Every structure is written in structure tokens, then in C-alpha cells.
Amino acid sequence: MVRTEGIKLSKKEKQLMRDDLIRPLRVIEYLDFSRIYDNSPVEVLEGYTVTDTETGEVFGIFKIQNTSNKDIKALTVRLYLYEGTSNIATRRIDWVYSAVNKSFGIRKMPDEPKESFWERYGFKDRVVPPYIRQGESFGESVLIRLPYSYCRKLEFEIRQVVYTDGTVEDVKIISGKKYTAFKELDEDLRYAYSKLNIYMRREEAHPIKLIPQTSNRVWLCCCGTKNLIDSKTCASCGRDKEWQLNNLTKQNLDNELDRIKNSYDPNYVHRHRIEVGKQLEIVNEEEQIKKAEAVERALANVAKQEQNRKDGRTAVVLLLILLVVLYAIGTVIVWMVREFSSDEKQDGEASQTVSENAGDADDYGDKPYEKE
Image 1: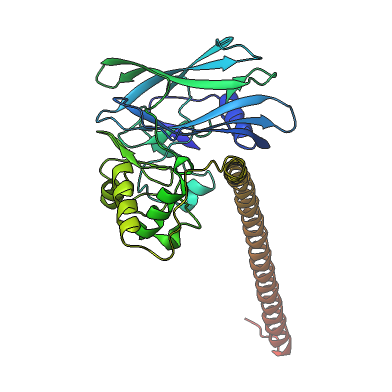
Image 2: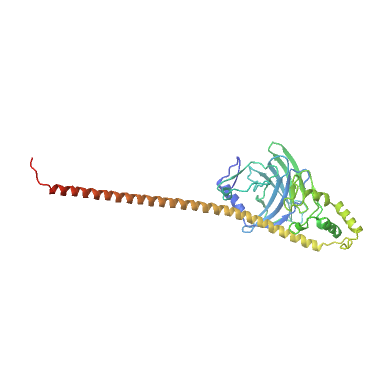
């Protein structure tokens, strides 16, 4: 377990957390947060709605990162649910991420050291501070309960941030600034990108999804991953930040396309702008399915790790009990051997004494009787 400084969990609360970690969850929808929030102290890295395959309960899960230069004590968010055909939110769910509410969930720091053996199997708690540190992500295992009747649309609003120094910042941001999706570019510009691209080998595992963008706190990689502004390469695909921001811009792609047209590139066939539409929708749907499968694998891995912790603790306890029993049996055997040896020694000494006494008696009987 992870223990937060100054926060005590009851036995029931610990059990509830473990039960949530091993729930059999299936992803309903992957929520797109590939947008940078201007002047926001936190960034939503990813979000998805899931359902418990056994109970049918529906939850929202959001992974958030502290991108400010301060430590965060609490974060207030609000979910807007749109049901039916309504264009106005029919339900609102307020939620507070804080140590006091035990709602920080799984927390990860960049370049965090690996768990020790004792931490991995739950014999030693990993101690974390009661606040979110700069660059730390949280909320990954926090289940925000949603209505059973799943909504048509869900919006996530960052409302208020409370810092450890006591200051409070009202954010109230629902959506980040718009980005240009790579699929929105016409075939000519996509061809221009193929001429500029120096990361062809990484396209298969991490294909380009959008034109990168940056803010004063984070930068958005072309693969859709958000990185802290100090990171020189993407944490997911490894592409260089400066190269992307200097080359993958709409203006630079237009310039490259003009160069291709004037160079009479034999592989280039100029076409008018066409709508790929249907094919793009198929590709987009495939990407969403792959992303959902990846999230489900991640959730299953968390559940497996928690189960391994439990099984590991049980195995170690049983092993300790077995060693204690073997030690007790060994102690008893050694004691019995010593007692047996001692008895044999005493019997031997007694026999020798009887023999000596008998010998003395015989000697006395052989001597003649002497008068005084």
C-alpha cells in the first residue's frame, strides 16, 4: 500500500481501495484530451469511462498532472453530463482530488525509483507527502461514479486549485485550445510531411496524430502525448521537441509543398483537395479501439499487480509459519537426542558403580578373618 503522511486509513477504507483496484473493468469510451489548456496549473493526460463487468456500475477515470511551479493540496473538478438529445448539461458531478478525501489514487513522479521487494508485496508502505508535487501525475485509479444510464456526451471542467502555501486559483476551464489533426490535412500536405519526416521508423508504433503545439507549461507531441515544457524529447515516442515545433507547422508544410511542386518530384502527383471521409473515420475508429484495448490492459495489469501483492504476502506468511514449525520440530528433536544421550550416560555410570561395588565385595570376601 501507499501511505500518505498524516492520513490514516481504516481497515475498511484499505479494503475498499484494494477492491477498486482489482475490479474487472471494461472501457466504454476513450475521452480525447489531446489539447493544451492555456494558463492552467494542471493538464488532463487522459480520461475514459469504464464499466464493471460484474456489477454493471459505470465510472469515469481521469489521469491528471501537476504542471504548475507549486505543490497542489487539492483540485476541484466538475463533470457535465449530456443525456438524450439535450444540448444543455442534464447532470453535474463535482469531485475533489485531495489527500484528506483519499482521492489522489495512483501517483507517479517522472523518473521515480522502482519499488523494493518489500514494497512490491505490501510488507512495506511507500510513503508519499499529502500533496501533489510538481510534475507528479495522479487520479489514475480513482473511480468517479456515473449514472447507470450512460450519457451521450461528457465534459470535464477544471474548476479550482488549492496550493500548499494556502493560495487558491480559480481556473474554470472546460476545453483546451484547438489543435489541427493530421487527418484534417489534405493528401498534398501529408505527402510534404513524409518528405520532412526524419522519424519514419517510429510511425508504426507512434503514428503522427496532430500538429504539435506548446504553452508556457507543457508541449503537445505530434503523437498526442503531453510533456512538461522542460522535456526535450517526448516521453512516449522519443521525437525531439525543437525539431517538431520548428518543422511541423502549417506554414512550414505549405512551404515544403511549394518546394515539391517546383522541383517536379516524380513521386508527387498533384491532386485537388478531396475528402477521404469514410476511410478516415475507419482509421479513427481503429485507433480508438486500440486505445481502449491498451487502457483495458493497463487496468488489468494494475489488478494483477494488486492480486500478486496479496498472493505474495500470503505466500511469505505461510513460508514464515513453515519455518517456525520446522524450527520448533528441530528444537524438540535436538532436545530429545540430548535427553536420550544424558540418560544413556547416567545408566552407564550407574552400571559402572555397581560393578565396582561388587568387585570390592568380592575382594573383602577373599580375605581371612583377623582378630583384633
